[in-house]
Image (tube, rainbow, N blue to C red; front, side):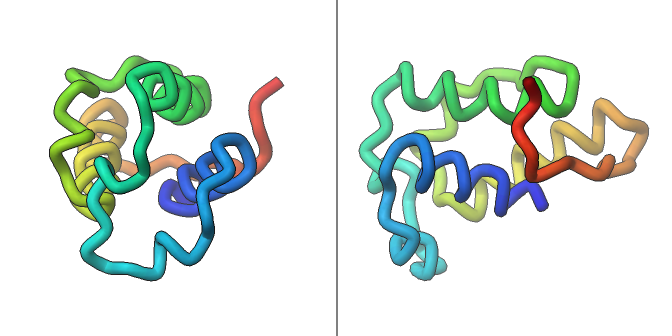
Length: 92
């Protein structure tokens, strides 16, 4: 679900081509997100999870898969090992 939320955000809000995400070696840097884009993307997750992700400045140096795994690990750590159900619907 986390992956789909991020992909939907990048496709629908930032105009990224959905085909980009078919590449299992996709690097976050290849998404050409500036620092504001990155912050907005992370706010999307933080709003749904209810806490701030630690040190998001490292994500541009990661692969997309590694970024997803890192965000999931942070969510699990904040929720006693659990990954809560995250809605695909935007928080209003």
